[in-house]
Amino acid sequence: CSEPCPVALSTLVIMATFCTHPLRAAAAAVATVVLLSRGSESRLGDRQLTGSQSQSLHGFEYYASSTIYGDTPMTSCGSLDTRELVQGTEYFAVASAQAMQADFDTEAHGGGCSWECQTASGTKIDRCTYEHPPGTLSNSTPLAGCSCKQVGACMCGKAGPDAGPASGTAPMGCFTCGRGHFLQRNPYQLDSADGQKLKGNEIKVVVADVCPYGPNYKWCPAVPGEQNAAGARNHFDFATKPDVKYDNNFFVFTPEACSDELLFRMRNATSCPASTWPGAAGEL
Image (cartoon, rainbow, N blue to C red; front, side, top):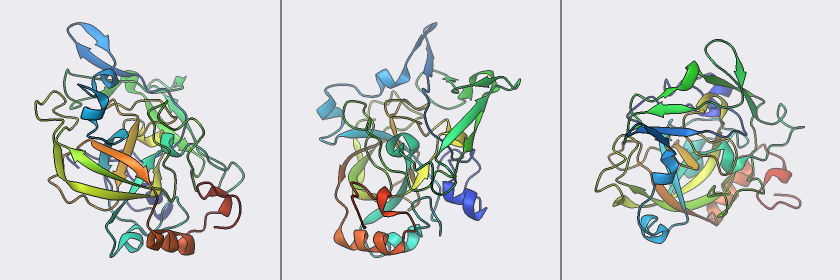
């Protein structure tokens, strides 16, 4: 990525470092995104798309920001190996933001997924807010030196009941898939005239990990409906490197069923309980 990117929750487990941006972590938050422009404040998310939604999304259902963290042999979705999972397939392994998989079993794998935030002076607050120059996320900073940390293991997440079209947050927890397309638009040239043009080819993604809010409060929204510092309600952190000239490009996508081969691989590799499988009512 063009700036330090989130590190997968898997990195917390295997103690490896793929990027230098704060680690991923926890859930639930209302991230207020501030755009400093013409002496007034406005929500960057309100400006994320222009024209009709169908034109802006190119026929896809959702809009996301993106980062890269790289392949890992152990993830939050039951110790999946991202490289082995998608090897020989057309899929790209990703971690989805906590908002997209906000339902975590509080009794399993270390007790759910939450966060704690505080200002530089040590005052505890619920959320971090960001400010940045007009039209770019470059040089963005958290107000009052805010920082957050993860609480809980954040393992085996599934989409919560508030995810869906009404909130703008896609229901994509562990073991879910989608198809989508990168846009020319990136967080550093938000007002580019070519931003809404498609970039590269359509690709397929599979969620194999989580991007918790806590240490990733800049990129990964905590609960459905919240926006990150880039104004997006969804975020994908790519384990499989995108095959485009990449600059944290935004991504439009639609959830869809995974291939039979991918389902077979995940069912046979995951250590997550059957109750965490999407729509599970019994065995995987």
